[in-house]
Amino acid sequence: MIHRFGLRVYYEDTDLAGIVYYANYLKYIERARSEWVRALGIDQVAMKADGVVFAVRRVEADYLAPARLDDLLDVETGVERMSAARLVLRQDVKRGQDLLFSALVTIVCIGAAGAPLRLPAVIRRSGC
Image (cartoon, rainbow, N blue to C red; front, side, top):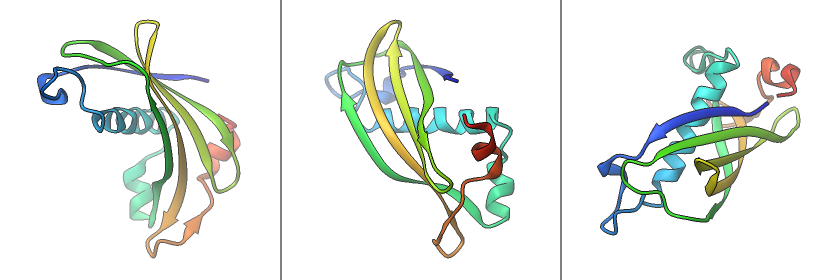
């Protein structure tokens, strides 16, 4: 299942050349992951209260073409692979059919002391 999250590029997102500053793509995919988790019915505030949080372990990113001021973008999030303790997502940022940015993001769960934990059962059961 692919989750889609739409956004618009604002002036604050761009650099002096008028294109989206490279680090902002990481913000875009973070927002999309948060919405994906919400769509799965997972309450991250409740998770944190229970001492469990998601953490990004690794990002492998490819910048393919620039996005510009006022562009309408879609972030597509899908599961590449999953184990009991690790989730690898593919996240693509597109303008229409044009792929601008693609990332493989490895997500883990950690406890309050920073020790690794199993992914929430709702994610493991869903097979996403």
